[in-house]
Length: 191
Image (tube, rainbow, N blue to C red):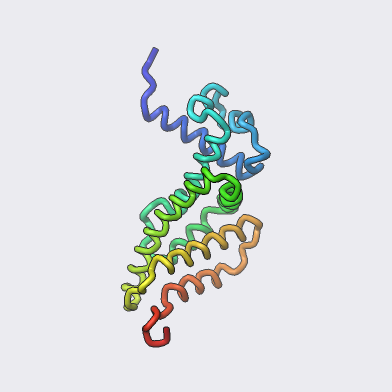
């Protein structure tokens, strides 16, 4: 019997994850069965269960990768790219993110994982805030992590609006991001 390569295993795992993500975005976590995911993946039930022993494991995996798909790379050179990336990820992803937040509200295990992801994101966005302020000739803010939290909340809110089909206000969100970043730090003139 030929040996299955790691690349093959990784591809199957990704195939299952993409199928789960699509079905969850269409039907929601509660309305999706493992059989729905098996059918969408095109693999056997045994193959799916060999990678993800339960639907709960699939929910966790999808939730963990949902934020990474928008925030996980280091391609953002400035903060304006964050809002555009949230918008460009589309309504399916926005729907999935809304479900992630809802599920995290009732699952302590998932909530803990999401808090861990938010901590990582906060570090990345804090760095972006610092770089953006330097780029604009502004002094460092004494609480750049606080600004990062505000920006992450703003982006989450925008994503939730996209999930319900409200794509209005993109320019206002963009202005709000600029206003948060450019706000005078406490103790600065005008602050």
